[in-house]
Image 1 (cartoon, helix red, strand yellow):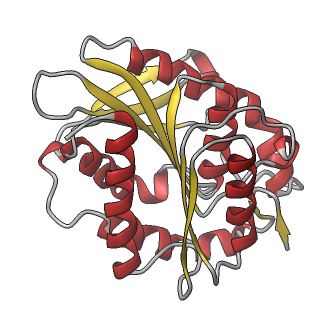
Image 2 (image 1 turned 90 degrees about the vertical axis):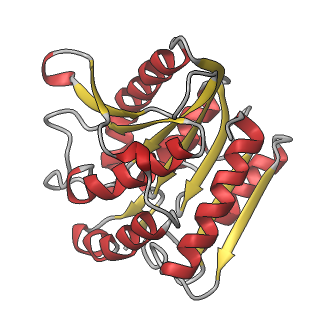
Image 3 (image 1 turned 120 degrees about the horizontal axis):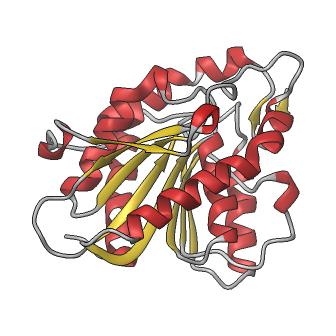
Length: 258
């Protein structure tokens, strides 16, 4: 059964891990030198604390920042894959941050709670954590004043909510996500949007990506949906390489970088 922010069931979400892993591992054509030593950051305190990891772009000049948001399974199952993805962004001239936006008691599954309700219950806290990391990224001595967000699946829905609420976010990449249910028809702003979606996605239907682009365009934002007819929730090697290239070009064009 589907809901507006991913699958209601844990098992289908786990089934999508292989595809997500393929995308993250295959996205960058060459090994990333920035991958080796990310700097760990702690946001908040006590049980509300979360971790982020910064991959710094080479050089001393000004650069943008990009925040990477994981899917519903959390950071743990694919931590190294998300790290590799962020390292690739850093090699493209952007400081990349991987945010583990779940606090200690927020990881799914939560008994008796659908994916939609799980998302709605924690959305306010998660957007606050993204905003705090945005503050940190833009306050750095090498910041060029621009930040983008890349969100995967549930992280894609979260990225849309954050960008709709924070005009400092200058670019948005959504991997097989969409518009959170409570925001449909209510958003007043979005930055340029690049969305990727497999037409055979049975976890987050293709129509969710189509709706995101329609709403973004209705707000006057530049928005594009890149469809992959033979892909599901997560992409194989060819689609992964293509989406990686398009993501780098889109972020560089809208944020700066190499």
